Each structure stands twice: as C-alpha cells, then as structure tokens.
Length: 427
Image 1 (cartoon, one colour):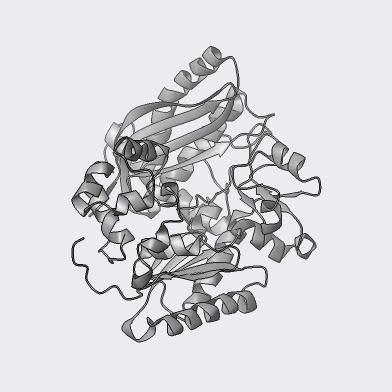
Image 2 (cartoon, helix red, strand yellow):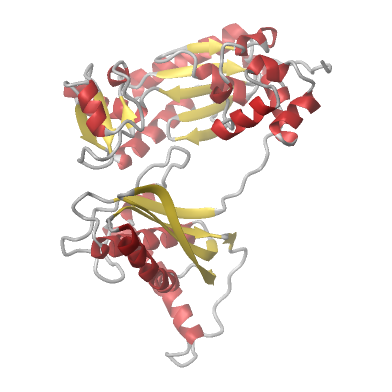
C-alpha cells in the first residue's frame, strides 16, 4: 500500500430524512406520526417521490407505485407535491446551518456538505457541532425535520457515513477506521457504481469493497476502467482529493401527464410549455443552446423515445418553439406506431454555452420580415415576457394557447440534484 498523507476529519455531510414527506408533516400537523407519501399527481398510476419514516417501515420508498404503496399500507396518506414550499424550507435550513458553519456545497435539495476547519475538526468538536446543527434545524425550522450527519476525512466518506444511521443519525469515520469500516457496505452504496459497473468489476474479480481496496491503486483503476478507479481507491482510504470541475451541459424539463390528458392535443401544449420554461431558464443563466431534444415515454413501452433538431445559437423562445414544431409530427407518428398515449413528455436544450458578451443588434432596423430582424425582436420579446411573468405570476403572458381545459398544470418540480430558482415558480 502506498504511503498516505494525514487524513484529519474535514467534512460534515447532512442529509435531511424523508425530506418532502417531513415538510408535509411539518405543514400539516394531522399527518405527523402517520405513513405518508408525496406524489406528483393524484393518480394511482404514478409513483411516490418521497415516503415518510413511518411509510418506509412498510417497505415503501421513493419510486414505489402509488397503487402498490396503498396495498402495502391501508392507512397510507397520499399528499400532492408542493415544490415551492420544499425550496422555501431548503433555504431556511441552509440559513440555519450557516449560523453554525459555512455551507461549502449544496449537493441536492436535501443534502449539504460543510468543510471543517483546523480548529473544529477534532472528533469531539465535530460531533458537538453536528448535534447543534441538528437541534437548530428542529427548533428554528421545524420539529419534523430530522437529519442524519456523516463526518469523515473527505466528502464521499462523509456522505457514506450519513447513510448508515437513519433517521436522525450521526456517524463518524476517522482515518483509523479506514478502510475496514467500509467492508460492511456493498459496492452499490458508492456513488457512481450502478448495475453496469458492478458487473464490470465482477468480471475483473472484484465482488465487494474489501476486494477493491485490497488492490494497488493502479490495479483498482484498471478494474474500474480508467483513472476514476485510482481516484476512488484513494477516496475510500480517506484522502481528501480536490474535486473535479463540472459544467452544466443541458437545461430541460419533463412532465408526467395525467391519465385523462394523454392525447396529442394536450401533449403538444405541454411540450410547448416545457420548451418555454427551458428557454426562460436559459436566458436567466445567460446561456444559449444549439440543439433541441424532444423525448417521451408511451403507455405501452418503458423505453425513452428521442428526436432532436439543430438550433442556431439562441436564447429566443420563438426560435425554440419553431424547432419544436418540426419535431411534433414525429411524436404524433410514434403515437400511431405505439397505438397508445404519451405518458411522459420532455424538452431539453443541449449543446449550451455561456453568452460571454453581448452588444446591441446591428439588425434591429432591417425590414420587419427579414429573418435577422425577426430573431432580434423575438429575443427582446422573450425577455419582456420573462419580466412580466416574474412580476405578475405564471402565465401572465404566454406564446399561444395555454388553457382550454386540455393542458395539465406544468409547475416547477425538483430534481433531487437541482434546486429550482424561486423565479422558476413564476414561469
């Protein structure tokens, strides 16, 4: 084994327990102590996006179909998701944590990581800090909001530690505990190891964490299939490696349609609404896109169907909608092939790049029907719509019909790895 550097406790990782369900129990006292799931729509055909601690005792978890969850627990309460409230609570929780220690990274809507300084990283001090944070969240934000905390030499190990004792746990991995404290975990417990990687490792003779870590770093990297295996070996031994920079590559939204609104008319309007939301986010983040991807799932098929269209490098909602209109006939043709409705529709803007600098257009005074003049006016109008909707609320102005009873409500939803800006709830 190579010589390893000193590995003091450097990270505190906090994971809110059953977050969405716990927020609902905080907001609705009648739900406290009861098995609860949060669902995206009021239909048994959808799945739970969160389960309370009480519901988990029946084997119900995120992804359990609502109909199955009801069979497992006859006393189950199903409550609709309120994503705006979850974001509000998230910001209140982060503010409370920062009363005790700066938040280094928000990892998801219900997870944060904090780096420990030299004067707060002995075990007793770090554990006392975790207890104060957990108590502060319960007392200042909500009594139902418990959390599990992991403390370790690096962020990966702190995350693994936070998963070991739920709910309301506190687990510490010190350098002296490593790597043998990890041997009780499965390979799939490590972020980045899914079914495909697990099979790859098994073909190389690695069936558990102990076998992976018994190898030399280079050999572990070979089993992994690249330099990440070498990196993982060091992380699991407690070395605090610098994190690799990441860059956003896509912006998009998807929506599961209600069973009664899966005809082509509703799907088309929903796709347009999702495209407008994505374009608005693109402008707010000062990006432009070169590719539009339309994707869908049909009632008779679990696979994802995709098609795409090239875009000029643009932020313009009208350019995005024009490209979408070229793709929708392909979607309709697929509905005919599948002989079933579309149950999920999504729109993604890809090949995005930052708008590094901007100047006034040279084409604004061209004749009104000139393509360059239309593009200039379209972007200006798109930005004006953003400002109006931010001030007066969602759908104050929109492009084309958005009502008429055929369209599902397309609100902002939380992907666990991305927290929406509050502005998105007004788009």
